[in-house]
Image 1 (cartoon, rainbow, N blue to C red):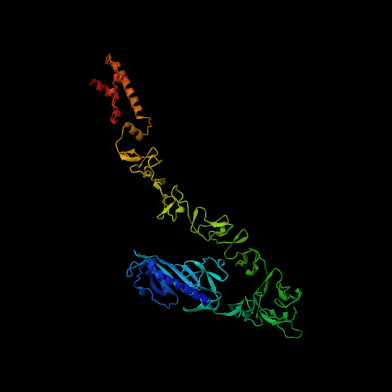
Image 2: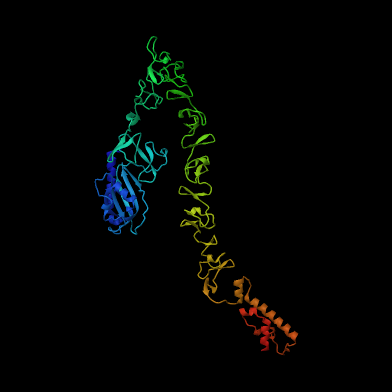
Length: 577
């Protein structure tokens, strides 16, 4: 039990914190609602009442009481309006008991309807429930004086200090070899029916009483069920000194000639199992005894005592047996099963003739995959630890399906890896990674600028009016022209620019193409005129080749429509005119 000094110090610490919070109420924007009973506060937060909580009228939920068995002082923030409904969206419990402070939250239900007004609740309680902040899975993870149990107020198992006989207890504490009984306000650890309290190793324990000959025991006081068998020897009730075991009775031994007797062993002169001896040869009255050990007749070597019999011990895994105590030849194989063979203990599994711990969780030490069965889809022993099976990924101590493709159901980003550049789980579906867009079941880089490499128009979104992927590069939209790294409205400059952009004809310069077309046209004109005999006589005036050929009449810019007409006929018609 915690001393009154420690309890007083705990209360003082709590009151000091409350006083500080009340003094700083305005600065911290915290409102004090009152002091209420722990069970009533827990009820409020575990029901849908928390979804429509009206701070002004707390009498609807609980009664204020400064003399509560387990008082809880409630503070809230922010408070929109005391007469309006609020949803208690978050809460935190600080539980002060036995000089320690414990932090946790109650398990709550989801609200079917929610309020726009949310508030946080701080609950400061002071009571006698003894808990420990250490979470656990088995007793072995707790201290020597603790037990691993699921706490009623928290959705997890924690190490709870063990309570001893006659100490106070509640539903969250564990009574060692006893039961928590009594009224709600005055409960203590008490011996169950059929057991009695006994001082043992400095502690008062509850032990079974009135045990008969051969029953398991830890103290002589338990052995009252058989006359002259009030001794606990090697863990079993046995005949007292001066008596010999005959059948299921303890009879006076060493009867002399002509003295009354009820069995041969009384007259044999042989201190049967458990009797005082000096030499091994004296211990012949019980089968498989034959050994004088520490002044008492004991089972022979490699035999074990069980219910007044000496049975063969050291049985290994798979060997025949009659009782569990015989199966001690293989580690963790101490169970004699129904088919009378030694098998692995509960929680262990037979792997290649060894009993190894099974049902292991993620992260626990292992040797074989078969040991890792506690976590769903976590059945792989990797580098000496239980890990997720192939095709699954680890996320918050769970193994989730991995390597998912686009649009497959998911819970976390790490699952979405099958499609390149995906990696996001949005609204329960695998989606493209940030900066990428979905295009024909592929995630392609998005928001590209002009002249960046692309494969689809959807990628080119960085430059306004530059949403076209042309020849593997982001380009301006139709009807827009590039000017100072921007796409501005404009017409096509020439046929050359059109054919270059639209059809991918890469030319060195526009002027070079024009020259080739003009020269070819001039040659054809000359040949046609010679053939027809209509060529004009040369004049005495010197003219350039361009002038003599009529090049001065060729326009500097060839229009799009001229591409589809005969340039020679067009020029000839102009000559005739």
